[in-house]
Length: 202
Image 1 (cartoon, rainbow, N blue to C red):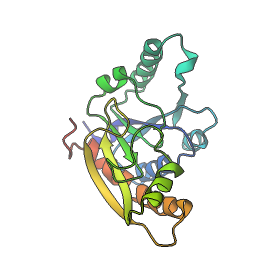
Image 2: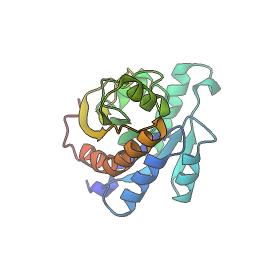
Image 3: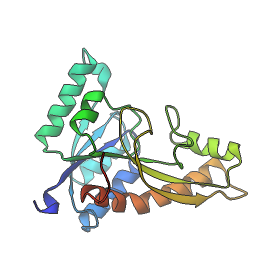
């Protein structure tokens, strides 16, 4: 199969800056796959606008809109199947994936986390809260972790980590900005390697 035929879905919840980095990479062939669907847990996420500007299909997915979690999972899986999705990339997606989805895409879902896991992971550790925790700890370095997704927040096998120094005068916002820059630089490369099978996806 030609690499360009690999179809991926990107899951978001907010502004979608990492989504934009992936979109830009796919346009220049630095990402050897097609972003075919963007799934958002937030109907007002600016990432949806980024997707629409790039003419990528979007789907707002909220469990609360279904009668049961099972029905929600099945609808999402149906949508992924309709778009022939082979891999999923989480890019600031704040919801825990269902066991059904993780099982259906076992070893084919990757997540980016703005810290050096296993530190500062788990429920509630996202966005600015991660960087606040890092600064409160007195750690001299933080970074970005990429891991295969399982049924627990920030728990699956880590495939790559990149360190970012914590500076003496850092605020949560300045630290977040530097970590975000590293995320944008590395995510397209990591996702490309992931799709090409350069990691053990189990």
